[in-house]
Length: 137
Image (cartoon, rainbow, N blue to C red; front, side):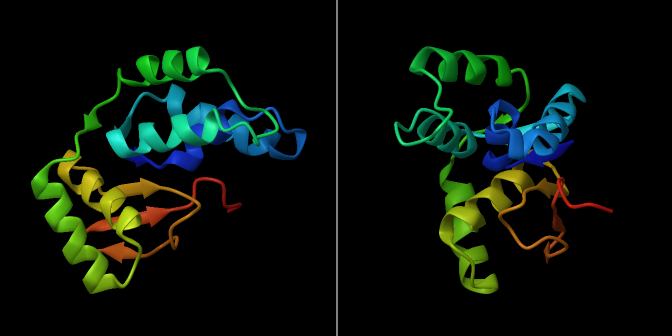
């Protein structure tokens, strides 16, 4: 199982022709069925996907429908243990708290890989490695 960051979900719904390749890749990753998510990722998706200033914004109903569908994947809750671990990861690796929370939610789900173009690809956070799923080989 690979942990999917918010940007993958946002590309999956993108209608921007400039993002067509990333949209296809994001949908391939989700169709593979081995994704892990977190409540944080789903919340971030909702906020960004429905943002009025987004050129291809979707409605509340569309966003919540997608979130309901994606709940078929394992979804890590934000627990006190995940939060405390994220505090330590933030301090140790000097990254933003919200990025550290992604890393620790991934770890809590047992995912060794986080798929994200927002985090430093190739970085290993004590056994959780970041990979940019959109990077060309």
